[in-house]
Length: 422
Ligand SMILES: Cc1ncc(C[n+]2csc(CCOP(=O)(O)OP(=O)(O)O)c2C)c(N)n1
Ligand SMILES: [Mg+2]
Image (cartoon, rainbow, N blue to C red; front, side):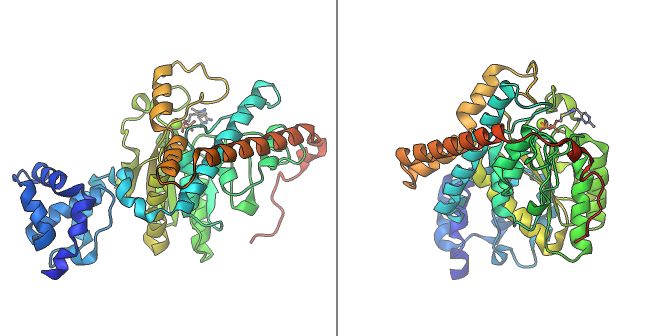
């Protein structure tokens, strides 16, 4: 049984003999002792237990080697369990660590920290009365944008709602131009006319910045349609919130995306709250990753406070879409630390809840620990990077403050499209 022995690593993937014996016993109602499971490491996993093990592997977000399926079976025999197990990709942790390089960890840290310090600066500028209009900060949710961006290509299209500064930065847009936009300056990324909620960067394949809750979803679906229509390999990552997830146009988009097999990742940033209401009070079905089921769209819930989980989940989703399988939903379980916008009485949650998330689940602290535990960076290096980022953002903000205000005739420019289609 040489071939079966090769699968002994699956036992470790599922937590080792003791845990697997327990999981299988719970799963099948057949009592299995730990020693028997350990003996499979030498003797091979019996075919009888393989279906249950495959289900556990699917649940924990692991790949299943083709040769592991019992004779006559393949992944499609497990389709129903695929939709049943929305926690699938949520528990990537140590056992998937081997797919992550030190370079990944370093860039997750730098990129997330940049987003955090940038948004903190924006909060300060707003507090000083230098930013007008609405302003929604992304603090707490950094792992989502950073993890997704690491898994997609620059040719792919990204679109989101009004909480958009971070996505734009992740796309590689100029932080200086974003600051100018916030301050209503001529050099702003939308020439100072859009402000916080309406930033666009077509050169970065970033399509807004939309103030109407959920409105970006059909547009993101249109971006996916354009890729398909023009035979491009690019996909569309369409972000929206838990509140937006119940808008009617989201379901119309699901339907069309599935019907036309469009290359789109619907990325729901479930930060647990809309403008002033928790998802539990606002949504009849709180398992947002399952909302595409009746349209035949698979969905996975992912720990959106962990950039490694986000990245690995996104890699799978990207592969699914690029392989021509059509849309997929990724529900990122995340959390925002600040108010919904800069004016938010925050009566819908306790300070203790926010504090607990910050202390226990902060994505940047998590990655910092990875850096230290694996001797990738020491404390000094970590601090130097932080200081460098702070200094860079301070300089850019000072420069932006001194830049010229948007000119009045900008009001009449770029209102209607009159350029060449590409
Ligand atoms: C169609 C529409 N309805 C209501 C609003 C007011 N509004 C702005 S943001 C928001 C909450 C959306 O919450 P969610 O989708 O969870 O996104 P989050 O703010 O949490 O990122 C609401 C109701 C709006 N902008 N558009
Ligand atoms: Mg929300």
